[in-house]
Length: 269
Image: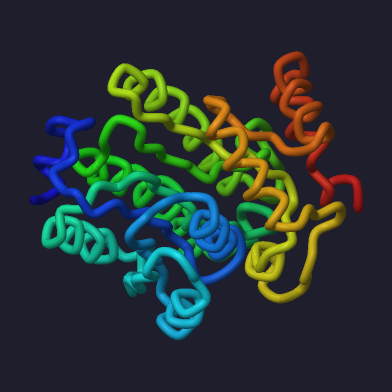
């Protein structure tokens, strides 16, 4: 099965082996999703997708109920999705839960950050997320769920995070539309919209200059809240009152005001 046929017949998965598939599983939210899904769901396997095989093997060994299956793939590269697609086609599982988590950010003024990482951000946060959402459709059944990891940044045009925030705005819009399309088949689509979380994100986004963001929430609490909201049938998950207030404020404040307000470099000069 290839991506050209992936849109056929969602809701009638061909296989009987029940799995979860998690991208970006080697660390952070992806790793925490794997551990909590292993505890909360009855599954045969949890497919763990990321580049770092050693981290995936470690995580697979920690799972106690489902069998952890490392799937080594660089999802920034176009061939990475092909690795996942080929494994799905070969094994024909029923995907009960798909966590589309892989993504990264870069901090800095648009013109000061190298071009290639910004284009890779778009490739991973948008293209890969969309491609895997498309490819997973034939393996979903009634009762299956997709979790798209968006961000609170998706509600706000953020200066010094211009491309990252724009990619997450795409994820929010895409997730809501997909949720509306698939609900008739009994398939849920949920967007996790976290603010700062204590993961590797800050270190990667700042290129090693910052280990943790101010006010960061712990990953276990964020994932637990997401899975709870998913089971309640919500389309979006905003864990804290501050995150909910920020999302609400974007409905009444102008995008021009929000972008200027986030421009920390402007206030520093």
